[in-house]
Image (cartoon, rainbow, N blue to C red; front, side, top):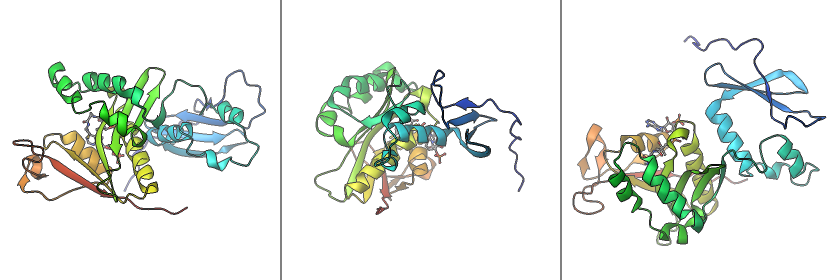
Length: 263
Ligand SMILES: CC(C)(COP(=O)(O)OP(=O)(O)OC[C@H]1O[C@@H](n2cnc3c(N)ncnc32)[C@H](O)[C@@H]1OP(=O)(O)O)[C@@H](O)C(=O)NCCC(=O)NCCS
């Protein structure tokens, strides 16, 4: 097998992950984007040790840092919030931040549904937004997620831990701003939901979609869901549960097992 990736430039444009006017002393993290999807990282104290990753993974990592997922590594050390802010990865920054949803997010989420489904007509998008009445963020905000930046809500996941099925979690609705699609944002939302559900003792996640929503089916497959056997067959041979949501409202049902990790 040959590696078709182009050689990286010998002298890439390194960007320092620190405020421009910060005198240091560092050491700082530096990154360089390209060629293609590659992102390279190094520390200024060891500039010859370069780690290469993908843009999607780097952005997912930055989201994780901003969400505080790595804070426990510096607990009990003398690294302060100010130090973390100096990396450019945390703090009051307009770049995307993943957080639990809040009831007050409901208007922004509805507005998003009415504009982000660009392959549908305005009337269809309005109809779609009726799947998200206020009750979802009134009663399930804590298990739902929002990604926001200086422009407001850029992605969301509405999900819950059903009282009637104590081993399960359910994802009801997800949306990513079209401008951010294909960059790992949907995966980050789902994987964060999986981690939270597993931590709450849930061992399986369910979701459903329409048989014609090929994008959603591909996305769920990529996220490790299997399609449950149904009583019908849809486009491309997908198993369908006929009249699942009422007469003529067939659905594809997804199921994913959660691996419980013990730290
Ligand atoms: C579906 C949606 C949430 C995906 O979000 P996203 O941020 O673009 O997805 P990601 O970039 O995180 O992709 C995650 C995985 O899904 C796959 N995927 C995403 N969209 C895909 C598509 N249209 N076709 C095929 N695969 C797709 C990606 O290849 C990726 O796989 P990988 O991580 O193994 O490489 C987004 O396209 C969206 O909001 N769509 C409109 C809303 C919608 O259809 N919701 C229904 C979902 S229930």
